[in-house]
Image 1 (cartoon, rainbow, N blue to C red):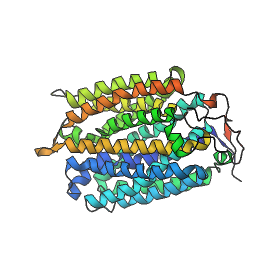
Image 2 (image 1 turned 45 degrees about the vertical axis):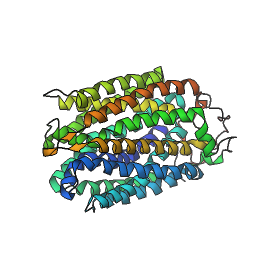
Image 3 (image 1 turned 90 degrees about the vertical axis):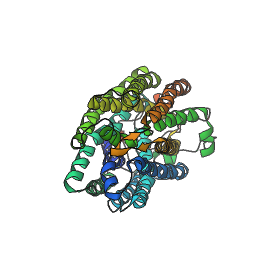
Image 4 (image 1 turned 45 degrees about the horizontal axis):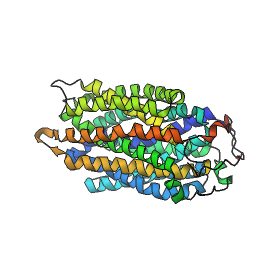
Length: 422
């Protein structure tokens, strides 16, 4: 029998899972100009590569919303990590835009459920009063992927070609998948809970709190990915940042984001998610306008990039911490899968809309980023209002039902009160 695992150790393990999962997604964007040259892909079409991943993740999330809560979360996590490894490795063998899109579709089909299961496990283990800090710590994998993973990937690509980072991440993912399946205990508490009245997937999605949470998610992700897939090309060709120093952007941005995520989680626990997210949104809007709409003749490219990543990270943590309080334990994987669908559909929508308004000019410069930026600003501004309404509606049961600091493999769970009115 597996030993009991503490909350802290479980968070470290889930954080490592998220590190590989996020790195698989994040590294493709800064590598875009490299493999675009090698495969003959126009820079203005790089958004399609990101959109293919997110669209596949959204479709797999629909299936996950129907079935993930039926399985031991440990076993399900092992399966999706294995699929993610295969999809990542397939990217290294791409020979054209179509084959790269196919590889990213495969990776996205398993990467989306990996995130849903990771967040469901955190929500199962960590009480609501510590949820913001826990989410901030685990979502810090995004920042660590920027600080460690993306610069390492860029250096591998510089030394050994653009295919090397795909092979490296696939190998790391295989090791981590085996580690997670070996060290995690069975996670079956949710299987012993009786379904609540009105707990079908359709009824879940019709709840006002769920609609607000998914609406805020859509606004944030669509705004973000109207800009992110093209950010490496824009910084190089429009802002004049040198390719050989591109890794420094992600080191600096990721380091600041890691600190900001932990801070925003603590602030969300203390002052509320809506207020915390509103502060991050205000900074996000200011940075987007300065970088994409009104750039100066000699823009401070490094400072703008760091501010963009920090503001983006700051508003994501309180949103996710608040959303995690919406579903009951036996609904969490379903809700997280539905949220993953919305996240990835929003990401794909933002990337596709941006690709539709962008045009590659001579020398690689991108025209139309100002229009994409205005679209991002308008959507980002809507998120705090949705979160404020959601925060007023949610009454987290976890504050009344403490969760032990250690997770026993087969510990029974008390049946929670009804959540159908949320």
